[in-house]
Image (cartoon, rainbow over all chains, first blue to last red; front, side):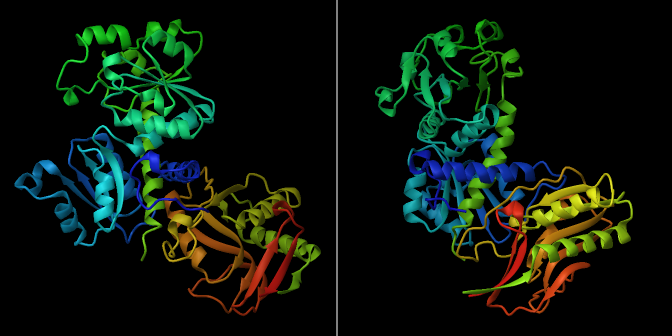
Length: 309
Length: 179
């Protein structure tokens, strides 16, 4: 078996297609493992992983922690709210203090774009980026692609539209990199104010008409409007956003094909998608969550196998 | 590199029939027995044994699964190459079952040690036995012995035992290879 071309998972941008295939093949095995009566393997029993969350998270932190525990790694958790970061400690100092307790791998979420890259250059541990500001969220993009592959067989040639707040979304950027790398066609759709300038340079098309976008696509990845990252108003009202960019069952049923609906969570029900869409058979939102554990196990396993003894 | 034929296709066929008969002797109807081929190379032997039991001895309803031991091995991060995983395909639990592990070559015993741990993810078996085509008897690192053995081989550590199967793109044969 080949191995990953990288020692850290800092972003999809640093991966190649073979890396993604290797992660998916490994995730297939782990998906079988987590559906056994006993869902745990002893591979990483001599590895210690620190989960450093400088920004809130429920799903991602739980998913990483579960993935680590399913691999038998020792896990320590840290959230910025209850730490010395508040007392003025720098990121490198915080992490080096943790590493001096013999930690092999760091899973980090941080509000600043590039925090993972910065850390990887200054500390001696394998770094997994669990989201850095509006930059990248590589494991989310991997599990999204894995879920599309599972549902539709392959990514190559599939048409995917990412709908919503593209401007503030690390999920969107990582997904664009991952999908393009695997040969998908990608469009982004949302209010013009929430679509970054020059996004076409990434090889994606911009579509501001949701109906046209849905008629075109095989998969719609619905993003949440990230109110917490908005200092100014990007659209007049939530109601108007929903009318223009929300997906409801009536709209889905009016299409002449059955498209796949994805959402990275957390869902604002009734804003970007209605409840009947989120709970419909076309939505693979909970499959995404289950696949998240298998994909994260694969990433951690493959990175850990590169850590020198 | 020199190689010596240890077992020909004819000899392998005779041995597989003997092993199948020995299994029948101990397991009769295979009601509470499950066969588990150890990935990657044990699955060819496991398939053959199952076919012989069904076709030549009319044993019906045999449960056969494939067990991958990669994530249970004791040499993670110790080798030059990363460990390659294979598919585990076990659609039953082994709770209270009589499990027969099937692997082509028993060498150090470490693979079987891993398999003993791995199978526990599928329940608590009543007992576990081991069937192996080739038993390299002087090379063990662990106190593990087969219950059913095809042929005992006294090979030194530099020598390799290679088992070929038709299903694996060759002809049925076992070779002793000296590098």
